[in-house]
Image 1 (cartoon, rainbow, N blue to C red):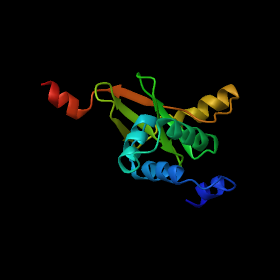
Image 2: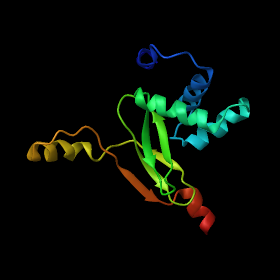
Image 3: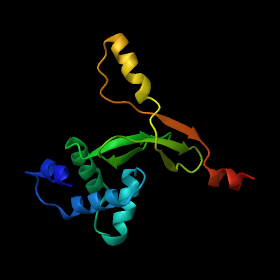
Length: 139
């Protein structure tokens, strides 16, 4: 939280921004702008979708949010920037995103980078398939 407060220094206080941050802190999986909007709209019916887009863009610029994944519906899903990184298994039916606790890429990325003289600044790893709930409902 302290790091986030430092990044917000100099930004005007905003109740709507605080609501977006609250929603993002309480979620365990990345959310689209529409998801964030729908969660906030329940408590704050006056908020607009364009306000949520502006807040998300600002939080991305400040490095408080990051794009976790963009699914085949072309809607980005966002998560708070935290220590370390996450990868996800993504259900192609219901779009559920399940965090993966391990990173199989970390072991090889340094070898590849050293061999090619490449400075890696990040990576993404996503697995696509059908979650157990959707598989169960298909039977």
